[in-house]
Length: 390
Image (tube, rainbow, N blue to C red; front, side):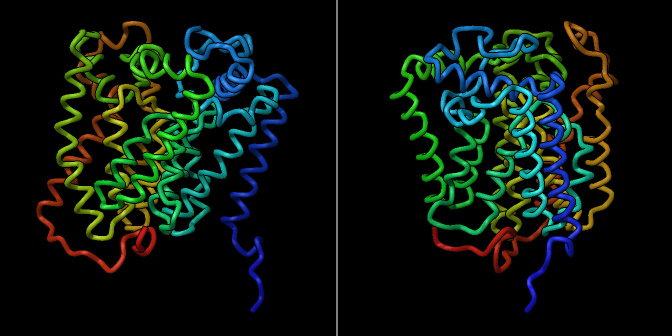
């Protein structure tokens, strides 16, 4: 039997070309001094700050940042440790490396969720959460790939570890630890939780002051990363803050709505998983997490990629087109915003300005209503790999 060559698979070739193009763009950004990758610059600065023994959270701006970036370090202290490889690189090249890894991660997600149809990674670049993630040098696609591979891949003795690592970089993936427990994967969930806790314990041993500052103050201060009422915060918290003009009770109301929405969401996850629709169950958890998080910037919504993959494989073309238009139209970038502009919206602007939030909430509720009419018919094996003992 002859070994298949890379050239025989246009999807693989396109994925490789995209990764090479991303690295080449990073080299050009470094040599030309382009101001790309504000967030990758923060990752690099956090790693340098950690190595220099300077405080991570008590300053509004890290000294290691380039002059054109003025952002605080908002991630758990374990993230700074995991970003240490970036410390050896200049900012422009660091952006290129993060972007290259992100493009590879995008290909991995498409490979797992779209039945290896890697060619779909190219149109996915047109989605606002995806191209904005690449432009900023964010790690959203990397975290997405870690969770997708961990949850949907074949189970083994290390299942759950990648989810724990993802949660150690950003706290929001902690919801996927809960997903593992809800779907009956107790050992995997415990490994994920243990990995996350172990990394936090390591940071308490290495940088106790930073770790204490983060877990007693920085982690509970959403305003640290910008105004929560800004349109680009597409979470329930952002919606309520916009509607209430930043009323002091907004966060509590948003949390209450998220708690109510969690009830049908957990029921959906259990039903879908029992029927063998592992990807659909994972997406319900993902979008609930985006809604419930105090801050979900639009570039966090990269879960649109596996959603489109699912709709495509099920041949739900009308719904796939609607999702593509929603996330590809940049609708939230076209609505007046900034300062207190969000407080002046009427009904029309409010619907457009909260498009991601409303679509996700209505999607979960609509799916729950649909599920009520369907019988529970488990299949032989869940999507994303045959069940095995963990």
